[in-house]
Length: 256
Ligand SMILES: NC(=O)c1ccc[n+]([C@@H]2O[C@H](COP(=O)([O-])OP(=O)(O)OC[C@H]3O[C@@H](n4cnc5c(N)ncnc54)[C@H](O)[C@@H]3O)[C@@H](O)[C@H]2O)c1
Image (cartoon, rainbow, N blue to C red):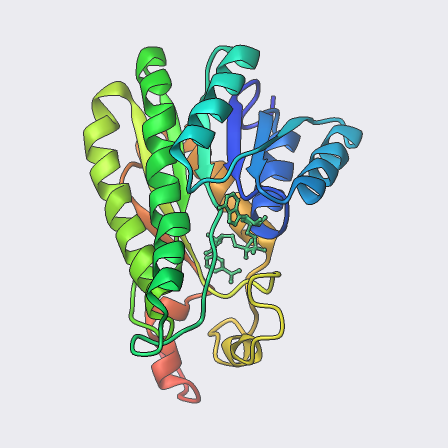
């Protein structure tokens, strides 16, 4: 038996990188996975690889910023399976502008994708999870939701998404719907390819490496599955200890 055997799992931004790894692992652990993305070719290709590996997957175009696109996607998923057990709100973007330099339409686009996307997703699936009396929602947040940073729109959106996670966890708990936040540190993917802070993030990490997409997928699987049945409203850094604070003492020797 897989950890999420026969569960219906939606992964937004599942065409590539972290979302694709989540989709692969959920499918390998027995879920029927529906990838939502706007990169149709990449989404189809990821879906086909999962199916070739023996998993169950489908792909749908869905811009998470768009409420009506969510309505169409969820209607399709309900038409196929009659229910949805897991939602992984993974789709996200970063526009690297400082507070004073940010173009307000860029700021709004980051908020629309990273905050309103998950909000629309939760509101779209929750009625179906309520009717079923169960569900697990995993929001892919960031360690940028735990401290300030140079990219104001991104950090602001992720702080808000972590807050939304708590509110949703409280409101939906009576129906046994759990909502949790995964807060990855640096994971080299297409979102940060070529950025100078990637090597610095590796050099300064307490464990001396960046995270991998598989590291993060393992936590997503755990929170999506019944193995985490009483974990609700949590926000879990997955960053090799980066947010533990030890980087402030880098070079110091720990002695017992
Ligand atoms: N890579 C990291 O270091 C890191 C660290 C912390 C958090 N995160 C978060 O993890 C998530 C995934 O990041 P990634 O590194 O895989 O990035 P990525 O850019 O490689 O992948 C993001 C995916 O989201 C999709 N997407 C973007 N806008 C969308 C929209 N409007 N509708 C539907 N799909 C959309 C993209 O097409 C892409 O497939 C993001 O929320 C990101 O903020 C990443």
